[in-house]
Structures are given as C-alpha cells and as structure tokens.
Length: 276
Image (cartoon, rainbow, N blue to C red; front, side):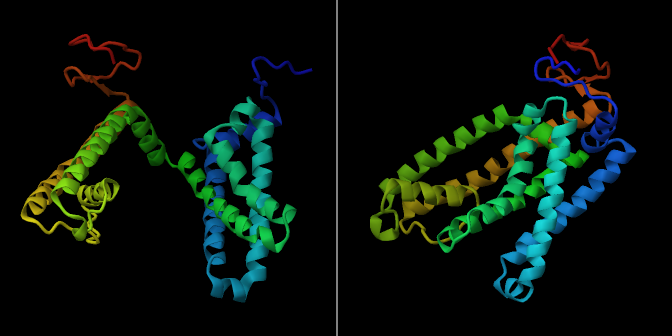
C-alpha cells in the first residue's frame, strides 16, 4: 500500500517513466513528447481560428467539428495522464498550467452539456478559451522559461514603475482637463487621462488633441516623456534576462559591485559582501 505524505505520492515504475516523459522536457523522450505536443497545440489553435471565420465554417464545418473533438480527446488524455503520474495531483491541478490544461478541454464538453439556442452566445465565448492551449508552449521553450523567470524576478520593480506611470497620467490628464476646453474633446478628467495614456505610450490615435498653445506645450512634454518611459521596463527586463543567463551559465552578477560570482552556493559577494 502506497503511503501519502503531505499530499505527495511516491512515483515509481511506469508512472515514473511516464512522469519523465510528460514533465521533464530536457530528456530525449521528453523532448520528443514536447515536440509532438507543440505541433498538436498549434494545429488545435489553427482549428479554433478557422472555426471563427464564417466562410470556412460554412464550407468545412463538419471537418472542423471532428478535428475539435479529436484535439479535445487528445488533451483530455494528456490531462488525465499528468494527474496520474504527478507526485502532488492537487498541486498540479491548481497550478497555472494545470488550470490552462483544464480550460483547454472544458468548452467542448460544455458545448455538449448545454445544448439549446439560448446558450449559443455563452458557448461561443467559452469556446475561445481553447486558445489557452497556446500558453502550454511556454513550459517547453527554454527561452520562454528564462523570460518568465526574468519577469518574476523584476515584478516589484515593474510594479513600482507602473504605479509611477499611473500617477503621472492622472496628473497630466488632470492638467490637460484644466488647460483645454470641452469643445476640444476634453470633457472630463477620465477622458483627459485616456488622452494622456494614449499620448505617453506613443500610440497617438488622434481622436482627441489639444488646440490651445498651453495644451500643445503640455502635449509636447508628454510625448517626450513617453520615449523615456518606454525604455525603463525594457532596461529592467534586460538586466534580469542577463542575470538569468549568467546563472544558467554558472555565473551571477553582484548587484553591489557588479562582480561576476561563479560559486553556485555563494550567498554573499566575496568582494563587497552584498547578499546575492
């Protein structure tokens, strides 16, 4: 009898071999499985896209329906096998990719369980969730995993940056509301903030624009500020990606003196004593 400790089931035998194939994409068998799964995901997402085109759906609706059920059964089998070979089934089921796996297969079954014309609108929206399958590609791409680690490492800095930008657009939008008149499109502070966001992100729809000289001067400042704002998150992520690459290559960079630390177990910089 297998004992379960803290929700963890020891994996052995065929379950261990299956786990190495499905969860360890660095092994030869895991890489082959990942390639097949990536190809299947891409085909399934293309099927969803084609199904949204009326002309294609009217001409090949039966084929798209068969393909959708085929992909749904494949991903259902994959989901069940992952639950079977997972050490902590509940942890996998509630993890990000576990939820993505579930969202990828639910809409097709809901389509069967909720027949009727008054459900068609809801079902059509739910079927779009099948596109979530493409998120599964991330866990099989080393570069994508490195990018995710960089985002996770820098989320505090990015959060502070986003909060700063939000504060700036509120102030700038409020100033523009005071300077400009409703006749020029700045009818409220929220609408003026919308203009500030569009301008500072250099999108520039042009649906609202200042007409007075003070307003145009403020708009010029916002435009120039937009260029510097775009560079900030890029720089933050670049530093974190560089750090992740050094760690992967067996080296880390000290944040205090920027020295290269090659000892993987080191907790403090040997040159300046900064905590790594």
